[in-house]
Length: 530
Image 1 (spheres, rainbow, N blue to C red):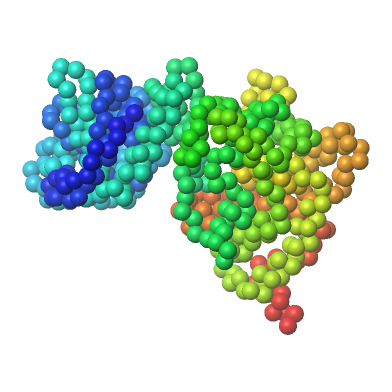
Image 2: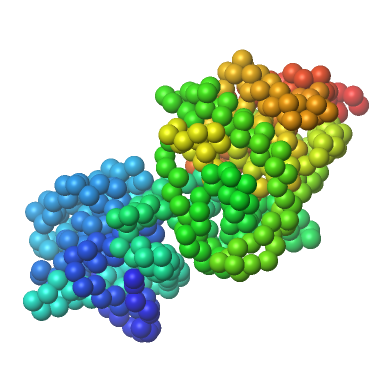
């Protein structure tokens, strides 16, 4: 684990100029394995634009440390990482982001830095620079300086981290906290690797030791601007989890009812860190297409989950501080706010100028539909019940074949919501015939348990909530692309737009469908009526 900060003062920057730095940590490692783990800890917090400046005497271990960082970023322990002593720059095009490894030892003049392309490299990735003192004033002043002090006749090393507090302090402290959490459960020697996350600000890692595999959820508190005059954020209004209590409470409830949610191994709930059992990488999709039998198994689980009547009061385990977590209701305001993302982001992306009159008409169409879906008894809706969050565990039987993750935003809502999330999976195309079969399978299972189950009401709610979810997802994916710099989500828009068309074909949605058709055709129905 990294050591504690030892003070603040004036230090010579790697460029040779004097800049005010904070000594973030002095870390002593006893062997090569410790160096590798420290490199992994650092690799987990890096982002494009970061520059690491490695200094120390010949043989101090600069290249060893840089090699370990690059291999951790590449998730490839066997990756060939030659020293760039003679080439000056070695570049790596990695899946997460590019890496440039520079060795300035043979640089004759600092001005030669201009030919090495460091600025271009930092626009798309990170850079590791050995012998930075030879770069003069051509290195960024906000780099992280890492001075390596070698012990005599041993593999022990002391790493001294210095960086501007606003740039590095929080990130260094957080990666130290994660390693400490692993140590608490006997996984201090675990290998840490980046794991592709979801569309939220949460970040994920895998942690693998000799006898255990775990998933680390990293969800630091965010400074989110208010979305209402009352000071509420969008997350407040639509009931997105603000801390780790929700995921622990819902997960424990699911496990207590026999569903395969990951076991909590360790938690720092105030700090937004959660270490959970790794359920594996199996998917209910193969070759980019849904596997009907696996989607059917997910429907079976969904019917059993709704029959279990879990919530709204869920017990928090003692390890999470005890007490009760109250699952919020998926109320009309939340549903309307989510649907309105269609106006806020998606329609503007088509060149539509959304007027106050259009917003009023949109709300008028949606108000009775949202009121209708509040009529059936609410169930625990996991809210993102679709392929990315359903882990296929084919060696098991029954509901144990489906592992459940990413349920921290669960709400008490219509049983149709998760069914729509699955049968109109935003990440993979579900053909109309399979979609219809999944809905009817769910209806049959519910009717088998309860002959009085209102199948017709459920089918109507399914169409309404499929449309509401499509509105939300279209808006969210455009927002992710335009605001958050994640354009890959735009590839899903045609599929979700097709799903919206399927949902709008229901007679209950005919007025809304006609209104949307007018808007997308470039006509404002309100203006036409005037």
